[in-house]
Length: 79
Image (cartoon, rainbow, N blue to C red):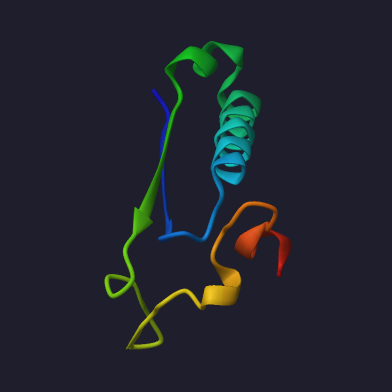
């Protein structure tokens, strides 16, 4: 059973983006392992709360301008 665990900063992705990632990662596993892997593939997207994510030896907090919100694409679109 393929299992993929993706961790992102809290509020960096919308529900629609998480859904798209789940579908695309599943397709990747099917492409690699075969169609037989589809019903057994699990994709877990975990959000790490502000203060629990470190980058370059500093606490990382998602800037307000990059938080996912209705009508905004967050980090995935580069906005």
